[in-house]
Length: 110
Image 1: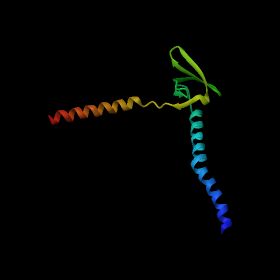
Image 2: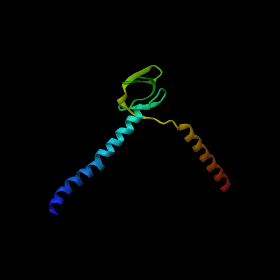
Image 3: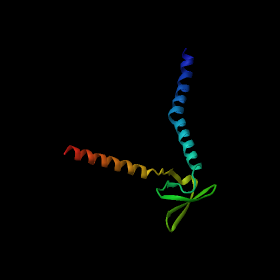
Image 4: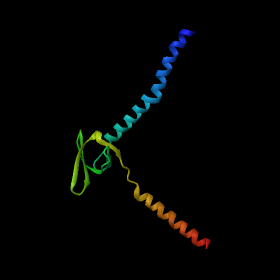
């Protein structure tokens, strides 16, 4: 039995490291690679340096980002940190509806 205990502890330790460290890193790397490969012209992105811009040109290795009307910057694909999701108009409409209903409720209470 003691022979098995000496064997079980290192195997258990390796399994713990795998599930707590290696597996989550691989999952995050896979998600990041999918995000980078799904980038297309017109997407709003943030670089690892914190620059915000819109993609205007894509190559296999580089991405050209339009920062403002006169500035275009070229980055490696790996320098893109995140793809911004544009849902602002829908949220604004929801807020307006909530404000309107709250105003109506306040008028009814008076």
